[in-house]
Length: 401
Image (cartoon, one colour):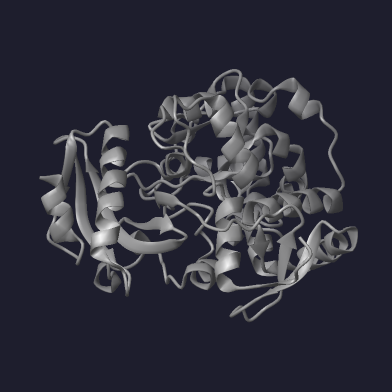
């Protein structure tokens, strides 16, 4: 690709194709090969605790592949013959096992108290003897949850109300000294890596830090297609100064091509294998943590779409609901849909459906309804109930019957 200047629309289509939205969904049953193909593109799935609709890491596959059996992803992540593992990629993430050696520099730094949340780093330094005792207990008793540790410590409740045992286990997790054996009701169950991960993965050589960071930036570049330095750095949460050095090396090697994008206020880099589709024919509901949109500044640059996590926002500051999914149609984000799964009533609750400025309800409502109906089926729900909130709600309610 010889050109070095791109329009905003071209950049948008490059990004969508890089994320797997330039291809039709499979016509038949989704299997492990389809999952691996998506992961080859996006590199990782971010994990989050919110379960108003469905756990977030299941949604990116649905957006790209349509309905699939979620236990397929569970088996790939947690069965004895797993091909995925949990670690801090872009926050807590599921990643292919091939990336484990590329993360060892981060594990080594974490063991030294670097690159951690400040409170966790301080705990690891101040309570090193206690952390060692917890590791010994995992060695003797694992797999084990934080609540099963013999000290019986309990947290204060909530996501960050961690007990001392949980803090110790999370420090060890960052350091790569324990890993996730499986999850029970989403609670992480910890064990030693040698009892969880394949021996061949653990025996793979550890690359030098610079080599690992270059490899991660290549993966970021492939997943993003066209991106700024900050976009590329954010994908695997790489250090600022080292990212700049690695980017210069990748440009010199010809892996990344410096380009400009109309309307972007900073330089961009094009993956050397990126393609520019003439059109994108996607229709997909996106997780708030989908890798297409998780970097909010990039989402605004690509789609002119200002997006924030409403469920981490005080109620009085929310504008479109609590668990709001953007709806991708073609190459634009055209609607915000506030969704909840009422599992007891077996209904998908559409609590709000707000179109973006200039959106044509007649053009958007049918494909949106089709995606919502498909989402309900995938979740094992019997249908949808549409609340009268938003300009698309009346037509969706009529279509839902």
